[in-house]
Amino acid sequence: MIAETVCSAVSAAGLGIALITAYRKRFLAATRIAAYSLVPIGLVMTGVVEWLADTAFSLTAWAGFGVLGVAWLLFMTTRVVERRRGGTRKERRAARAAAQPEAVAPASSAPSLGRSQGQGQGARSASSPRGDEDFSDIEAILKKHGI
Image (cartoon, rainbow, N blue to C red; front, top):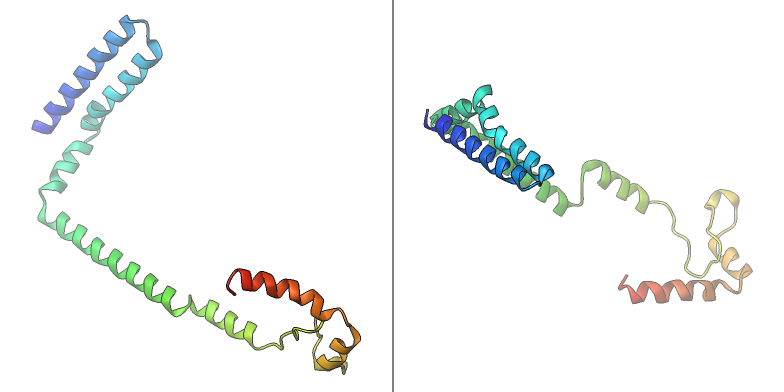
């Protein structure tokens, strides 16, 4: 009952301010103020204010908010643990799979295609004398960034 009265008073005061603003020939601002002032009375008429008042004084509702808070806390805890372990299960599998293939030798200028073609990494690095120069720039960039 008190909440409805307060909302009605706020709406009436807002409409009064809107009329004064309109009298001063600021119609756009007056319309905006009128729109804002009609919101509280609209909430009373739809029953939202009554629902909020019933919820605020209900022990069951507050217990429900507590359960929601515990659920949120558990969810956030699992996210922190997941990030410290290195991501989700899919991400860990992808990281393991990426680490297994043979890496390109630092001295080679072209990536090796594996053992299936019969050429080893030594043959590639011997065929390209500029291999060290190409990777020296990359090494300098990586060292600059601390990698």
